[in-house]
Amino acid sequence: MEILALNDRLSKYRGGTGRLWDFSPSHDRLAIEWNAPSERRAYLVLLGCMDIRVPTMWVCESPCIRAEGEGFVFTDKDVRIVFMHEFQLREDYPR
Image 1 (cartoon, rainbow, N blue to C red):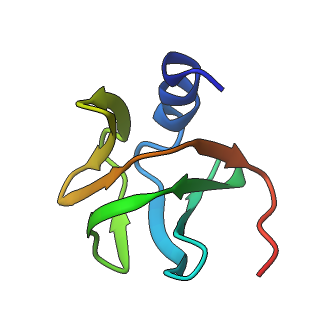
Image 2: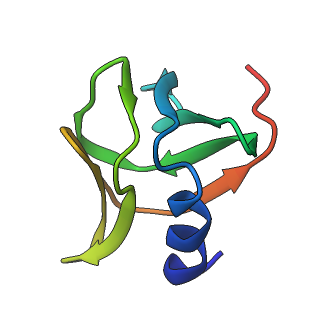
Image 3: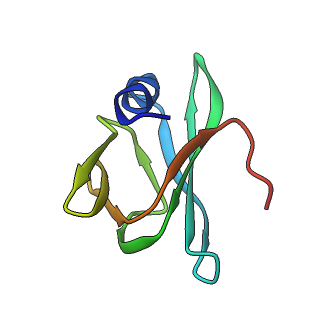
């Protein structure tokens, strides 16, 4: 999924909640669960995390992924996650 398309989908969760759903240091993967009244639950999966600053739950204001340096940055409110590889927005996330 391209960054612009992903950011468009994430914008639908404004006013909903983002929640730290799963982090696996051994698989270098972080998942955020998104909930909003008019949207299906979704999971943003980020691979290759280098720096993670995220509360366990927050109200979504303006989630955004952008390319930065050799990787990417996800931001929303007090959330900032720097990651190096890929990202996915999925409707399921097996633990």
